[in-house]
Length: 97
Image (tube, rainbow, N blue to C red):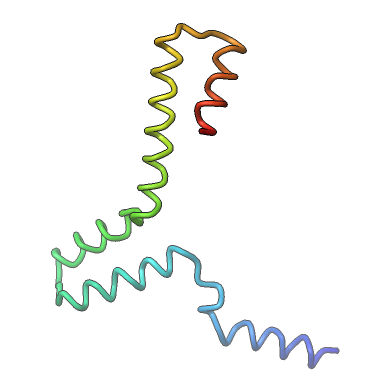
């Protein structure tokens, strides 16, 4: 039993990339881009900061599309002067379509 546990722990410790999350993947991609561009010093620091804080296009596109829809539905509900349950129902239906 001890051998099995030790073997399991050794296996887990031997592959730290198995636990790499999205942030580690992003760091890896940003490092590769910085290396390809041959950036050094402050230019590299600035690039890495921007790269690591930037969202992927699919994240920003999906979010802004939902935000645009919410804004449009809110505007329509305001124009119709809807309140309370009527507004909730309208918003629900509007956002589903």
